[in-house]
Length: 584
Image (cartoon, rainbow, N blue to C red; front, side, top):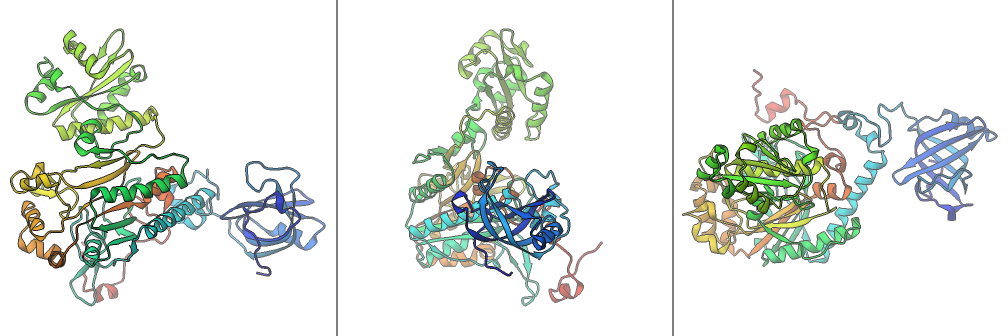
């Protein structure tokens, strides 16, 4: 480089006219008009137009050589642009080049460096270093940096200490498969990459750190989807001598600050809280999307004596009949489209879906079973009006609620029924356990260190399915953005929970021995929360794909097209680890 850079490419404005500047960046576009060559010079801040005149022989020759994505430096003067471009911030000015130096040439890029390139995702990830030159990717990565900085500053201001916990740790059950790392020094033994720093952050509280946080990588070997990656980032925090209200209040302040800085939305505090049972009964999900209405209604009583055996039998056998009234949508759905919705809910275990189009002439898949009495009761219960579409499912509660909840989300998305840009709530009072048919026992819904509600402690060994916890999730626009709980800080109560989980002494020692030992040396009441930071950034970036907010994401098959990871290792390395592959 011959000169020192004075400005970034997106900085200069009309007030800079007359200045001598040095810019450096990539050639986004070049236009040769004969006596003039125009170059769009690009860096992470934006684009500035460079003008090279034919009479400037040396620079004109270099400009003719330059192609897309060449890296160059330009010394020149800022002047007012004759043909202004209102679509870019620098559109009122241009740089008349006095000196151009080519810092590096470039091959023709295999993908276009523009946001609407229509290139396959796999190709974008293979050439991620080119893809990230696009303004949209630059914007998202800058937003990610800003949000993390804001969160860090908030935590420091509120007395938190940032502590890094190790990546090589002990395998512990956290609900998903671990990524394991073989130990060469300790033959036949393995580390696990952390699914979360859960036990270690609790140990930090035992160690009297009082308030801890970190921005931490976590790893889960599970099937991927649009908002899930094998490695993801958490904003993790824990507070001593704190209860549920303390944690929620602290985090509402952080959420408010993020909304104030990165949206135009005026978030009002406190954020509403919703009981887990209400979330499931009314929305079919423990992460309810409250941007629209269309609650699930229990209509079992209305159909309990119906001649339609599918509904009446489900009611008599302890299952339920649930309905959603989609207002003014009856004329939007043909029979073929309703059949597609039926196929959709079958993926969630529902065997079928009935419909009623409440119009001047009732249309329904169960019309012959709709007596005047049933219709009148439905009209009152569901507030039926002309052109309403009622969709009804029946099964055991868990199945019908999950199916109808998924149906609610799909119909809302397909018809753009959103009434609000943002809707937030805390979901509280989660069940402590859920029964695993596979294991033949109760398992923790969150983790076994979650404090049960005080009034439910006596039910731990007698009716574990009824025990609720001091757990809480922050839900925004139907996504769980973070979750946490008050932790157990009493050894006797922790042992009682392990007994309810039917864990043997050997299980407890092998899985949690070091932590159980730590609990015996004076543990403060403590509580915490962890945000899925990638999902939170997706919210503010207004994207539905987690790959858009991560610098080097992996594909749905957990591979990296750029680095070609994962890849085989040679026999020598395997032998050093005492590992033999079964190649059959």
